[in-house]
Every structure is written in C-alpha cells, then in structure tokens.
Image (cartoon, rainbow, N blue to C red):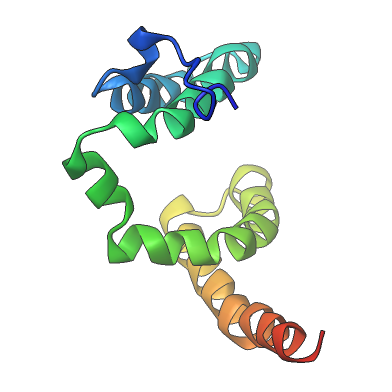
Length: 127
C-alpha cells in the first residue's frame, strides 16, 4: 500500500535494498542464530525484500524470474507439505540430509504434477 500511494521512503527505493535485505535475512536464518532473531529480524527483512523488488536491478529480478526459480515457486506448496516428515527423519533418525533433500524434491514434484496441478486445472474448468 505504501508503494501504491508513493509513500515508500526514498531509502527503501534504492537499487540494492531487495538484494541486501535478502542476504541479511538468509544469514539471520542460519542455525547458529537464535530462533527469536529469525522472527524479529529475518522475517521483516524478507518482507522488505519482496516489497523492494520493483526497484531492484534487472539482474536480480531476472534471476528470480529464471526457470529454476519459477519451477521452485510452482513446487513451493508441495515442498512446504513434504518438508516436515523429512525434517523429522534427518533430525530425529539421524538420516543423511542430502538424500533426504533429494527425496523431498522428488515427492514435491510428484505431488505437484500428479495431484496439485490436475486438481487446480479441474477446479479452473469446473468451478
């Protein structure tokens, strides 16, 4: 809303605000950082990054529009649904993280293409 009304402060309209906010948020989400910091600082920084994307350089918005990132966006809900069971395997069962990450992506891709997309297409046709 601030952007739409032209009320966004000038320092938030800088070319590199989105990139810097993203990098800072990612660093603040590392395991070594205490959990309250994740929510107090990293989440607002990600919100700032999203809202400052309009002012970012073309290379940054181009990177976010690339095929891998667009595919990740399509699969994001399925990834969200599948990550917790695999997280439990890694941290409670001591499973190797890299194979589990590959399994999360495989399950997410399958559930997206076999369930989510067909359901959405059916709803779009019949609703």
